[in-house]
Image (cartoon, rainbow, N blue to C red; front, side, top):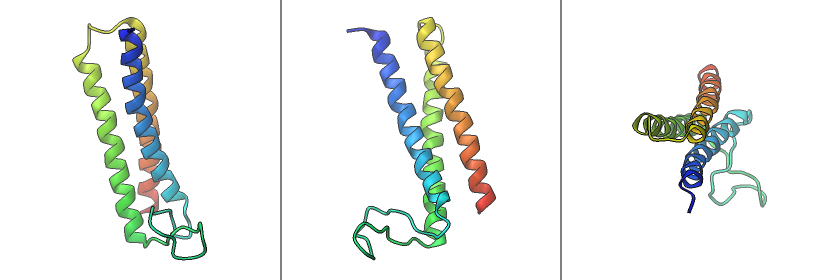
Length: 116
C-alpha cells in the first residue's frame, strides 16, 4: 500500500465533493426559469424538472455554498494539521486543490450574491 497515493485519494475525494456541490449551486443559478431537478417525481412530462420557488432556490444555493465551504475548511484544516508530515508531492497536491477550490467558491458565491 502506497501511503502517498492514499493521501492523494483522500484529498481528491473531498475536493470532488466540493466541486460537485459548487456545480450543483451553479446549475441552480443557471435556471432562469426557476426550475431545477429536485430528485422528486417530476410534475410535468416525464423527465421535466419539478419547478422550484425562488425561495427554495435561495435556500438550496445557501445550503450548497455552506456545504462546499465546510469541505474546503476541512481540507485547510488537514493542511494545517499535517504540516511537516507530508511529502513534497502531497503538500503541493493539497495546496493546488485548495487554491482551485477557493477560487471556485469565490466565483460561485459572488455570482450567488449578484443574483439574490
